[in-house]
Image 1: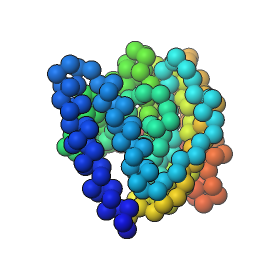
Image 2: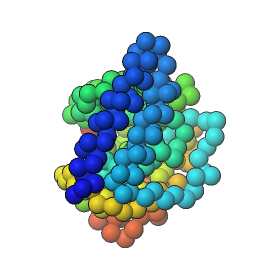
Image 3: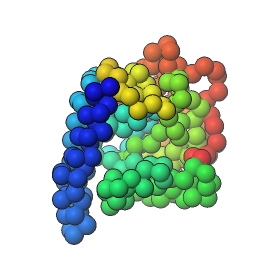
Image 4: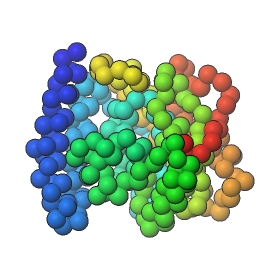
Length: 247
């Protein structure tokens, strides 16, 4: 419980003391690299305070000098911190609720993170189109194919939107298996539990030349890769592999 209280104190202080001046600098200059690096450092600090150790394998499979879509499964809110601490700078598809968080929401907006309203089908489609344009311009993305956190740690059905985004841009997909994070911070809880987050980076899956008819097969390839790096109690409970759009 002490770690939970420490997180509640240290993270806001870090955001104000470190993030505040860099946020102001970004507002004045339009440059956000320092702000992004501070965010990654803050993520690593939060993981350390939580007692979350990050182990990884397959980092050599990260494509260098090429925009890609990094697709991990989503077990807890500690996932993005773990993934972003090990990957090249990237943009993120973020649900709209996070854009309301003071400091954080403005920082994400300045950096170019894209808001997704899962309850608004038209906005979700527009977000996909916007992200595809950013990918074509050379920006990598972090996108969760499940669309939201798993309620129980098991892999959930996938949404098609992020796969359409990658295919429209012809950007490779890097599947990432996130294992163990649901035990550190469970959905619906705020108490942190020390433990290990294991990240397995899989071979990039090309999307160039794929059409809408190829999306189901693409989804299945990504899903199989992610499942291969999960523990037995994190694998899907049924054979469903595909859901609807981003919402």
